[in-house]
Amino acid sequence: MFQPSGRRILFGMTSFARSDLNGKIALVTGGTNGIGLVAARELARMDAHVVIVGRSEAKLGDSARVIKAETGRDVETMKADLEILSEVRLLADTFSTRFDRLDVLLNNAGAFFQRRAETRDGIERTWALNHLAPFVLTTRLLPLLERAGDARVVTVSSDAHRFGRLHWDDIEFRRRYSAWGAYGQSKLANILFARELARRTAGTGMTSNALHPGFVRTGFGGGSESSLSGRLLRLMTRFAITAEEGARTSVYLCASPTVHGVSGKYFEKEREAVPAPRALDDQSARRLWDVSEAMTSV
Image: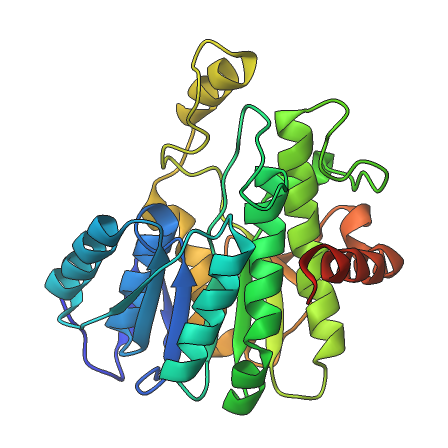
């Protein structure tokens, strides 16, 4: 049910004193299911003007109706396949013509691919969707984020970054593909990107943080259940948390006054956490930014 401003937001099994998001503009990628849908719903419940991004017009419409029914708030939708860099750029440009600022950007969209495949741009899918898409979208929207004055960029990573490393000599796994290697690398890149963005925007009032949502029961991974990765994912799903639980930290970083001004950090269960040493390597973060610029022509 819609909650008026000034109340405490009750969310899953937790609560925090909410910011007044009335008039704030929030963009949520992967907002048609799972933790993205839950996060979009909760931001709408806090009176934010929410725009959700998804690949399917039908799912976007369904999700908008669900949020409206549960919160009393309308949300806008924008269609884009974030695996395709031209669509990421078009999304950013379309958003920029519609709005003059952006207060909250939740880079939530991501996936695990059991088999190697390339996007229309000829880029390995995991790297394209999980890292290059949020990189391009965020950097292209930087003028709107900076115009907001105290904008928040929140990037969903994973504790899978702890077994990831950046394969500088084969970042797209062209020689030998490892599903978990590609995923871990992309999640490590999420944290390095969030930290480097925080460094580059220091003093602007904008903040950038990354988070681990937990292992969430959202149909994550897909693909063949007969593969080793498929069997492992199926086993892990028995211990997975709900999307409601998984979205908590995303919503916390997007909205809680507790983290106002906090930037360049990694969070888990609504608390700051210490990522793997590789995620704290400033030289790697700068190098990744340069590599990402070169790959995307930013």
